Length: 324
Image (cartoon, rainbow, N blue to C red; front, side, top):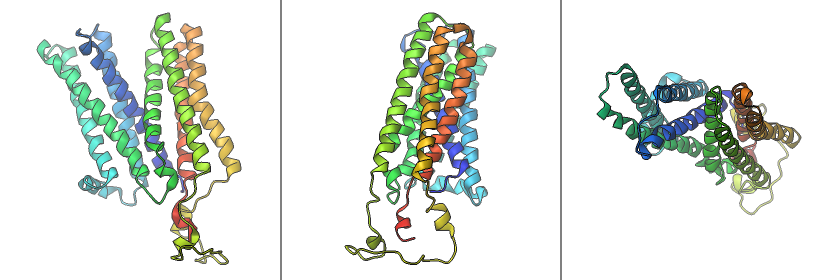
């Protein structure tokens, strides 16, 4: 498939944004689950920063996806097909998530200004739980847009959905760490950050290695004879069905040579898996440099995710190529 940068940017930015909202929701729910109030005003301010940044990333991703549409002005019509379309469900869940985030920011603003009764702080953990659920639904819907397409076996693969969740959690975590590590953290906190980063990076790396290994050996699921309506027959192509390249050739017939795929996979793996582990270890060993190191690590990991998403599209073969 021909990679469209707008869609690549969308899945990368929105994935990091919803992953950040998941972590923000967890931080907001934690005091409520422990039966205590937020520690101080700094904690509440951190909540607000995380919610704003998550909203910015998800909105930027969704807006970038509209650049791929032929007529972006008609994008609103997609919301009407939520019963049958994963794309429509993604839009509905994305808007619902944004509305909940805005409501949470309003509650935080009133609380900081002292205009919110203490009894209404119970709304924050409730809204946080709803936000987490909607964020999970949005990530799942984004993944299912591709995982539901039967003519593209590489996208139909069962590891596609888990990979979207893992990358959202990993990139969201790295963005969170790029923020909190500018503050002076204890050695114990840096040790926990090190372990969590290593765990997420290793899971993401192993998941992609397994996925790449399997799609390299995955058949298309049909033969050229079946594509031409001649099941069980061996069919050879001696002449192209068209005299010049058309939309199907350009969009569905894009092919990435294996000699190019291997170095790109290596680059992606180093950036989204190895770099975060090195950054977390360096931050643990040099706490004074934790902020800039994690910020650089998060940016490089997002760049690696862009490469990984580009490969996700470029290496997917459509069954229509059997005919062409």
